[in-house]
Amino acid sequence: MFLASTKTWYLERLVFFIAGVFSLVGVILGTYVSSWWYLLNLLVGINLVVFSTIGFCPMAILLNKLGVEARVKD
Image (cartoon, rainbow, N blue to C red; front, top):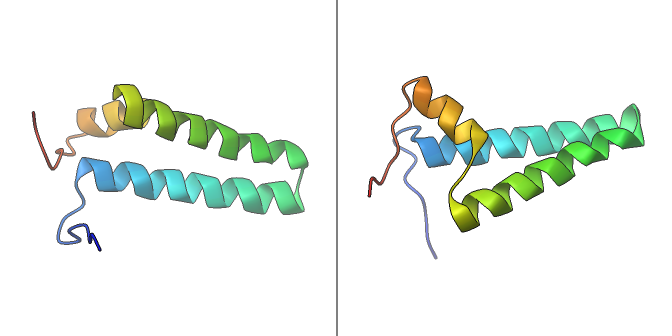
C-alpha cells in the first residue's frame, strides 16, 4: 500500500484536493440544483486525465504562480 506524505501541502496534493472539492460540489449541485452541474465532474475528470498524461494543468500553473512548491522536481 502506498501512503502519500501528509506533512506538507505540496502542489500535487493540493491539485487532488481541489479536484475532489470541485467534484463533490458538482455532485451536490447536480443533485439539488440542476443536472447541468454534473458537467463540472466531467471537466474535473478530463483535467485529471490530461494532467496525468501530458502534465498540463491550469490549476497547477495557478498554484505554482501563487508560490506553492512541487514535491518532486525534474
